[in-house]
Amino acid sequence: MKNIKTSYIIIAVIVLFVGGIGFTKYLQGSDPNVVSRSAFHWHPTLTIYAKGEKQTIPPNIGIGAVHQPMHTHSEDSAAGVIHLEFGGAANREDVMLGKFFKNWGKDMRSFGMNMRMTVNGKENTEFENYVMHDKDVIELHYD
Image (tube, rainbow, N blue to C red; front, side):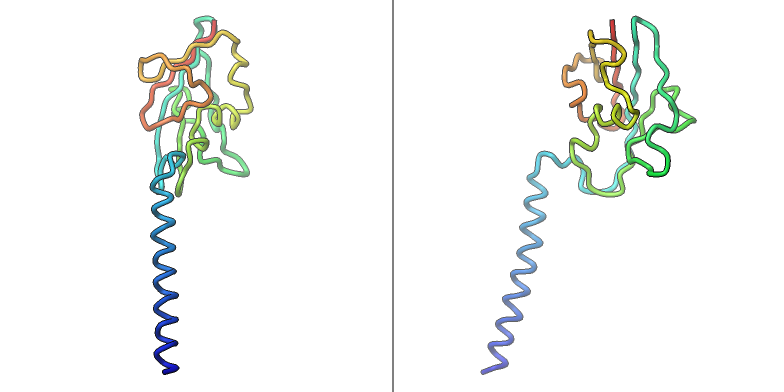
């Protein structure tokens, strides 16, 4: 009798454990804030124009004592390439354009207050809240 109770308890613990894992996966799968659940390496590009003049995006933004998942490299920063290198899951706020400016140490409006943005050739008004994706072509125009 004691072995049967122990067996039922072990089976119940296993069922609860497996059910808990499944429920956690379900919640993650339905979370609209999750951009990716696994590692990824994306390359959106950003071009900034202030009064018609193209601005330089410096190399090595986000690279230093603490390597940020969102950063630039010296070999392609002149082309405006932003590297989004995440070793695991990422949420929307992790890949927002405003986060790039924060890593850069600049306010997005430091180039001017009258701002216009296009993403992949289409007007976009999300500005710092825009969630970047692989191969996005982002242009900011300041008058």
